[in-house]
Every structure is written in structure tokens, then in C-alpha cells.
Image (cartoon, rainbow, N blue to C red; front, top):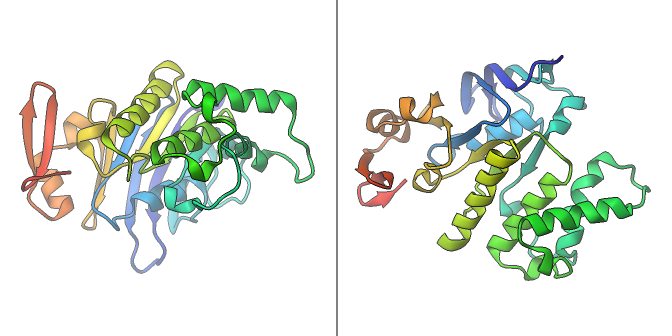
Amino acid sequence: MKNRGIELKNLTAGYAPEKPLIKGLSLFMDEGEFWVVVGPNGAGKSTLLKTILGIVPPISGKIYIHGVDCTGKDYCEEKQLLSYVPQMESYSRIFPATALDIVISGLFPRKSRLEPVKENEIKLARYWLKTLELDHLSDKPFASLSGGQQRKVLIARALISNPHYLFLDEPTTGVDIKSSRKILNIIASLNREKKFGILMVTHDLNFVWPYMEKAIIIGNGRFIAGNKEEIINEDVLSEIYGVKIKIVETQAGPIFLIGDKHV
């Protein structure tokens, strides 16, 4: 039986070998774990996700998915275990497709160009729309949906391919607080009830703290990875963010502040 999980060995990532964003990262993400990637803008959070997914080639190091070395390979069967929800900027707001069309398009990388969409695939798309409480919007144009609804459609699109791991890049950015909570509850439910591994880039530790198990903090030429309670403290965050960060303990959990602003 193949090893489970995703393993990074001495991974160096970025777009210029002489100036990598992340250097020498090693970690193991097991199936069913909830990881977040945090850090200041431009630190390489999105680049890390894209490197593991194979969108951006690594500068050096190894990426193993269920024990198989998928480093730099154009095709690696194990990559089908990973699914990706990119930032909204990757999608045009002026797009004629319906919500149902968008979800079905998540199957296209695994279908031949001329292969028609099957009835069972349409049913599967409707299942995920219903699971994410979007079935009433299936025939609505994607561009007409609210920001929160669009995010959930893209999550359904990622789930239709039956992955083991869900990678999300800033899934709550630009979404109101109520919709952000709904999105995070959905992601947490997928992790808790359906055992999806979650690797999520976020800018808001306050929102994700109750859900996450482990974290990768990247920034200021450094990184640290591990269990959240062990690595997330004022000294580490202040050093990596390059500014003073204060953690205020409350009954509802910690609140992370840069001066009077939330992290």
C-alpha cells in the first residue's frame, strides 16, 4: 500500500533561483489534516500552493504525494488527489457560464476534449451544489452571483473530481463576515465529516484559528511549520511579519493584533 499524505523535502520555491521566496521547507501533511499558510503579502504563500500542485516548478527539493515523487513532472497520477480553489482574480466576472457549468468544468482536466458530459456527471455537480446550499442557483450566471456564492461554486467545482486534498487560496478575501463564516464552516465540515485534507492560504488568523490544526508561517526570509499552539506566538509572528504583533487571549480564543488591527 502506498504511503499516505503529502511530503515536502527541503523544498525551495519561487520564481528566481537567486532570490527564492521559500528555502528549505520540509514537512509532512497527513490525510484529513487542516493546515493554513499565513504571512505578509508577497511572502510566497500562493507560490507554495502552486508549487505543490505543479503549476509552478520548484527551484529545488522534492514533493511526494502518497509516496510518489511528483517533483517537476508534467503528469503524475497522484496529483489527481489534489484539487485547487484559486483566488477570485483568476476568474472573469464577465463570464456567460452558469453555476452548474462552472462546477462541471472541474471534470474537464480528466476528460478528452470531445467527450460529452454524462448524466451522472451532471447529477454529481448538482449534488455538490446542493451540499454547499447552492442548488437554487444552479442555472444562474456565475457572474451574477455574490462574492460568497461564487466562492462556494468554486469549492463545488474543486470537489467534483473527488480529491483527497483541497487547496484554497484566500477563499474569504473580499467576502462579508457572515459569508466568510459560512465558507469556513463548509471547509471545516469537509475536513471533519468527509476527511478532506485542507491546505488554505489566509490573511486572517482570527477567523481560521478555531478550525485549523497546523500552520506554515512564511515571511521576512523565514518560515516555521507545525502544530498551531506550538508555533504561533507573539515572538514568532512579530519576527516573521516584521512588525510587533500582540495576542490577546479571550474566552472565544486568541485575537491577533498588529497595533489595533487584526492579523
